[in-house]
Amino acid sequence: MTHQHDHDAEHHEHHHHHEHVDYGDAVQAFRTDKDEYFRTSPGSPLPVAERGDFGGLPYFPVDEALRLERLTLEPYAGNEPTSFQIPTSDGKLKPAERAGTFHFDVQGVPCSLTAYTFEGNSAESVFVPFLDRTSGKESYGAGRYLDLDRDGDGTYTIDFNLAYHPSCVYDIKFSCPLTPAENRLPVRIEAGERLASTA
Image (cartoon, rainbow, N blue to C red; front, side, top):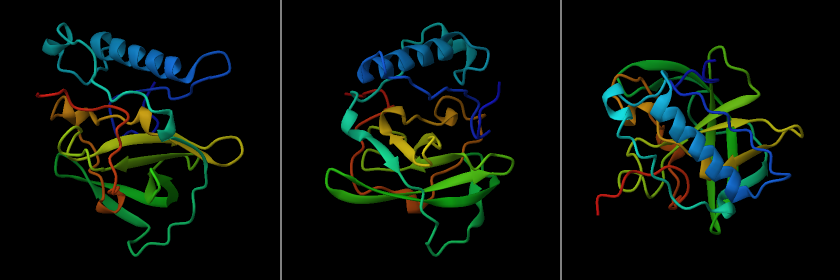
């Protein structure tokens, strides 16, 4: 199987069924599965020499308040072109489209994120990279990623607990889109993957 957006070497299933399981438990189970993928899968972004000593990815605590449901993808109304070339970590350019914009509040602060699609990908699924006030400190300086699938009612769920680092964090051989400046959030997103503490 290949990753939906082909912007990363990883393949993660982000579909959780919460009917019979606590939300926090579901996120923890997802993280356990991902650690196992990193440790054992041939497709792991970790260099082979590092897999044996891999102790698990570091995360912020699960924060259900940072799971935002029933968001509408509104038509892009910014000043940038809809079709553009997104720069990548290895100095290349990747054709992309601005699919629309999400508007929401975090801790009472109005925020917006632009969603993108790539050539050959379905409009049912969008790629949302973002920067926030943890970027460059507790999280990767070039941003974190979200992959969003459209829900049955046409809305989307932004769950920052599922925010993940691009593969180039682990190995520079990967080509990963850099987060456009328009997706810099004015708040700290203390959810999802983080960098290992240096303290």
